[in-house]
Amino acid sequence: MLGLAHHLPETDQTGFLSFAEGGRCRQFLSTARHHGFEAVGLTHDTPRLWSAVREIAEQIEHFGADVLCCHGYKANLLGRMAARRVKIPAIAVARGWTGESFKVRLYERLDRFHLRWMDHVVCVSEAQAAKARRAGVRPECISVIYNAIDAARFQEPDERYRAKLLRYFRQPRTHIIGAAGRLSPEKGFDVLIEAAKLVLSEHPSAGFVVFGDGAERARLQQQINAAGIGPAFVLAGFRADLDRFLPHFDLMVLPSYTEGLPNAVLEAFGAGVPVVATAVGGTPEVIEDGESGFLVPAGDAAKMAERISISLDNAAELPEMGRKGRMCVQEKFGFAMQAHLYRELFARLCPDPSDDDGAADEFVDSPEDTAKPATMPAIDLDDLLPTESTCNR
Image (cartoon, rainbow, N blue to C red):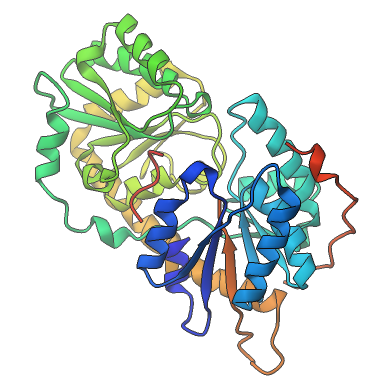
């Protein structure tokens, strides 16, 4: 979000609102302020949802915003209501649904139902757009705008981080296969552990390292121990400096069961690292199978192991695959292109007759001509239940 805000024209002002989320918003808000943006932590949250709607509306009026971008199911629901109060359009950014727990699945079901009443829905991939259409969002109310990264931050790798990476292992490793993400069921790291056991039987000097933390960590560590691959498979935890490690992976693996458009793949490509990933969500829209990486079926440890082993057998070809991935990111997934597409959308949703360019201010509510949305049925709210790399959060 900060990258997008930086790349919008100077005529567009951007501010950020975030729910408190138990204090987890503080780092993001602090970073946004450091970069010169107005950033506000909301004081009202669940269960005081009506108060939260009023507060969001007051902040929108204070900022004088022309459009509200909402990220997440709570932001979508409350943000849309607040935007209606002040008569500005509300955009939902649909990044994907994880279904990681029963509670999350309930919220995501509500979100899919509610999207059809947003003024517009931005989907981060064509695959996500198809899901939004199936959820009842009209095609004319959907735009596909890909996630973006700044590939320039990987241009000068710090060689000290290769040594740091190798120090995670007690014995020397010839190749490092990396992964990053939240340690939750939908990320499929249990499948990666199964695949690693197969790979290590052929390539015993390889090493696997997973960056990230989450509720599944203890169970995954037990699986690693039971497989007897502990010396070669490391759960490294969350690292705010993951960007520094990425260029020193020989290969990256994304074993997810579901994705919107994975930043982990974009960041690996930005670092010039080829990727073996499951063909889910928008991932096939990024990886050219056999050119910049390999695509495998979700949940198929044997196929994943096969592709990793083929990559290691042909290690001399990995840098060229990584170069193709980097070119892909530079051409299609940069902030300049993302900002251009958002700018066009803002101009369509809130045209300014005094400005042929359709200048618009944007206020981001964090966690083709648009048809008028249908009237939203009444919902009783009482009945409703953060500039570094983020791909290992």
